[in-house]
Length: 398
Ligand SMILES: *Cc1c(COP(=O)(O)O)cnc(C)c1O
Image 1: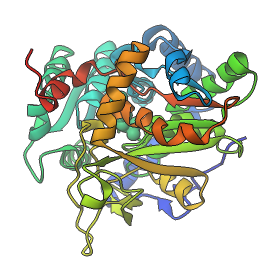
Image 2: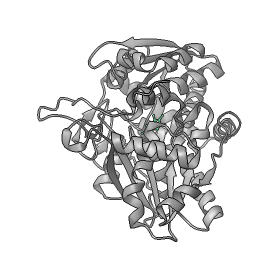
Image 3: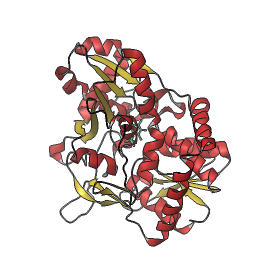
């Protein structure tokens, strides 16, 4: 009932692959072989699911958004509540899975890159639980913008390395983490935070997040007796979207919609929407759509939400776009802020600014839906982390 991609070389159609130096090839092959074996291993799977249940708090509820539904008056809106997970987002699904891979591989040192700090926190959390040495790479710009998350990682015992190169943000942190991995390949496990990077990462991160989509199949059946008509998720690197889309790829009646960050507007060029305004190229070890100029230089990004502020996107999304199985749209910062307030006021839920992108698309989507249809929004995370940004953006005096 689902696609069997990537192929053995890690490609989804023409996207993905392993565009890395020889030294990393060995580590990637080792990871792929281990994962292929463990995926079928009962002990590994029951340990993963036990951790998801008892540490993360799964399954996350499928919640009926009554007032939003009444407001749009054209179809039932349901929320898949990943914001209720431990540490506040879907990212923990992946780090709980990958730290188990590290454990089974006997790796004692964990590294990760982080942008807003959410993946850094999710990684430091699972490393603390297993008592592993943890190093997080983070651009110095982001360190400034997200000081509370930096403190949180330190509380969890991780060492945070500031990266000053380039634009001193996520893509530079990723370069630095890859460099660390090349140097310390023997004892180090690299936990990538989205469905990006070289094969096998896009596959592994998708599989660990797919628990969200599998739960949704059961919950939809129970809540409204059939599968949803549309599933909407925000897309940064694409892991929360891929996790909820994946089990539905072969159910052709279920519309899959990814929402990118249009920032100040696609037409201004100041955005973070490679699937809407990008072209295929190679970044961070894989071929995918990315934001680049005529000379192949990566373009700067802009988004109100740090978690979507990335010039690339996972290769499987590029493939789903080209074969037209999923549709990728974009919403602007202004639309996002409007949706952010609406969800707070109407549902009593404080969504992450990333997640508010998915909600913002309801203004376009709902007028096209019928009353007996069902729409699911993947509520990828909670917005407590964003309150400082919101106060600043709206120039609120506390
Ligand atoms: C990191 C993050 C995202 C973006 O990452 P994806 O890999 O695209 O899912 C979205 N929502 C929240 C809450 C996040 O923390």
